[in-house]
Image: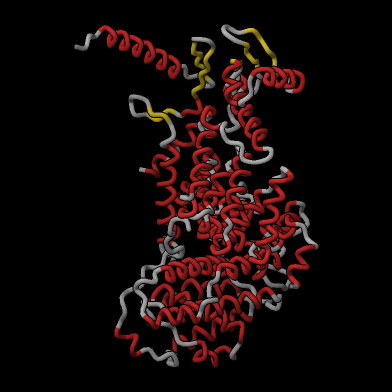
Length: 396
Length: 218
């Protein structure tokens, strides 16, 4: 696989195991959680996307920090009474549960990882069957796809480190050998892209026959945005996975329906914007398409510079800073390819042309600054002088 | 099996477009590689899909097939297909003799080291593909290329070269002139061998754009 990537969602690394783990009762539901679940359930039923977003970004984080710093949330069975036991809601709750576990629990068992995989399969299957009629905030839908790819990567790294595993853990791995299999991961993302018909939607949008970007992906005709937006974000998910596998050509093909020269749904959630441009740039760099890579890195680095102050309070802030650093480093590789003159100033090699006819070197300036040509000729004359001097030197 | 029967009704291109992440199509993709070699066709997407499947099913990897994919990729130069394929091949496989040779060959092609390159004829159509690539590179570099340089690049000499030159004089706009020590072939003008023709905007990154990023980098 390609170079290891760090956490996309910027969560801090998991703290060491705590005595509190031993006291964890999965059935104990604090009052604040009862309220949280009941309200979130109601807002989802009411399709109140704004409130859902507030609870998702704010409430969940605050409760996690206050009550579940390094312990899991109450089990789905325990909170079921507060949401009418709604099957789909509980899949969403578990999605949050396992994401929290991946961020905070240490060690995370193979069983936890496998259960999370099963939960994603169940959740995506429900969505793919087209029976979902809720509207969810784009941030949550992006995080689902982002986390799905992250947990896949995390599981592969976990599984690869077999040396330090106990008998128990090895047994668990054998038992859950279907979890996070690469075919499943690729095929779920592919299925979301296909079933959502997102490619056709984007095509028709260009001809004015469909509204998608204009409504930020939301459905104002009583339908659901979940399948369409998950399909959209899955294109970016596939780009990421192909980059991990080293197949940059196919990765870029997966992203092709998205026009990076325009605003789009990919720019709405900052995490998705950065992830798209980063992986697009990286793939182009590996394919030696330096001009394309530089152009996009340029744009996004300036964007981050302008807007990061607005995200300081958000959970994505760390992730933004990390990607900023990674891209700056990649940009320096591009700069190394330019010639540097004696003053240390970077001379763009794109401006400097010469051609040779018989014994004469012609220097062509495509820009008005003739100084490059003069400089070159002066150095060549100096060089010839120096060669002349050297030839006169007698070595004994 | 039902899947095999269904697969027969689709072309390989369909399979790669509709159902690429499926180990059942591995045999079809292998057959397709052999077809590409014998019928002198080429399909990068199908070959990348096969290399991807080999990553997931390492016991089913066929060194022969991988070598053929790499040869076809070499023939696609200047496209970067060779390195794209190499990214998907595990390092321990790249250490095999045949692959070491192919990697060296690809390097020779990159740096236009023709004298070491032309010993190898690797499959049908290989020589023509490499000659096409050589001519492509020469026309980016030269307005007038001396005959000996051309001869070494395409590995043709004597009467065969005369015929080759005649063909291109008629069909590709080449001019044959008397140069200082030997014949000289005048290649058609393009933006790369005639700097005046070079469009400023097309492929270059204006320096001003890059300077905007310096405050961020510091």
